[in-house]
Image (tube, rainbow, N blue to C red):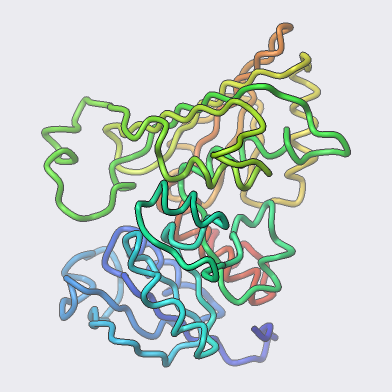
Length: 343
């Protein structure tokens, strides 16, 4: 994709699946982005409704349109349920469009792992650039199709990456145990009894323990595999009685002890050029990152036995979805990656 100059015409963008929570956040961000023009908002069950019928807080006079293969825009964001992007992305790419997909349809390179964890068939040729900017910026800037990372995966990968990828020698570890709590909005906007207020108020519960679809994504980004892991990995996802946010506790067993000061130095150095990652000296909380594109990381404990506890926090709808998607678009367009994201 050609990069924008200051005098260049704005790129046109459209969103397919714009009526969900992530789609609404994309709408808000793109409406205020200085380098793009938001063209169309496509939806399926909500087609024909005004945006303000669903989201009165959005200053948008557009209506949701049915999508039947329209291709007038330069850039397409897809915020569809898992499995649906597979039907639309190939035609968009053949037409030369830039595509950023927020679903899990193109995240995994291993076709067998995709079929195992997503329970759907996928062509081995269906490959996109994995869009985690802090790790893969060089690939993103050269790509024309991006698979946006999952929300749990973002919070966990960013919390672990410096141990695997930082410095000349990775820090050897033997086990990682992750427990992550997500806000209810992570399950989408569709009505489900188990996600209703009466079911979730003052409640928290685990689900998909050991089989969550973000597990192979996390392992892939860290250079391993869910089917043949190079270290012991356990992931317990949970849903809690908050609307938005992901709070991850990473319990790590190092093969040799490291001082907390050393680990802080490694993390600060690794993320020195990452504008949306903040390595905090004090404990982070979901409210510190809510409604922002930041990922906060706090190294809470490092013992003489080699046990380390790292805490991360993100907003699942922004850094875990729409915000990161716009961050990826900025990189692809040659813009400062914070453009339109410091609202």
